[in-house]
Image (cartoon, helix red, strand yellow):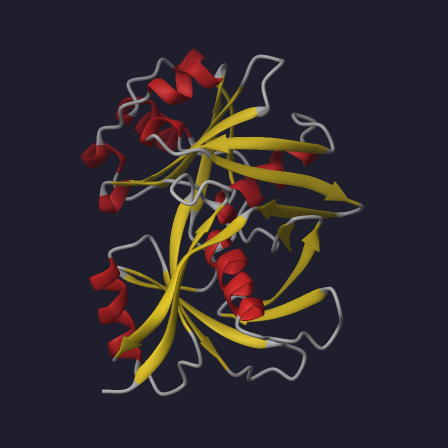
Length: 277
């Protein structure tokens, strides 16, 4: 057994119990892939990450991202949480104020936006309207009438996301998915809040194959923002609320900077310690 530095952080909420937790193993070059996967199953968090020396000279560190069921090339809340943990452990970026993370999807830039970290949204690999059979599957799984779906789009930036927009945040929060009927889709649902609150949209993320709802999802919010900005459905910056149906208080800060979309959120330490693997 070898002992490694271990951090658990909360991402997308300043409340330590209000966002999406992430486990981070530091300096993990000695951990085998099988052991990484086993730890991710053991933590049973949506993601567990492992910080490694970069293979690309342009990167400051490399991260591997595991869910309980497998490895992901990219994910949003692990990007912000891993960067926070790396910096808190004494990591020094090559370029002040800009961290370059290497992951399975390539290089991802992370920078500070005041008190928050934010990452540059990667390009989507699949876009365009959903096929009629996919829309019908979604409507059936969510017990929606076709008229309830105001907009729809493929928004896949790695995990395989598709998305629908409903007419109100209230409709989004009230959804009770039929998980078996939703399988194998990974579905984002977004709906506008009424004016006057701190969030413009409510978001939910359903993983049909696993029968799982992610509390707060950086990758989905990144590609949703690219869609909403590009289609003129959102202003140049907005806040998305996610997790309300799970008694979380996630807040994701989205903004367009030229041709790029940046995805930000608070990250706070929950505990630090050591783990033997």
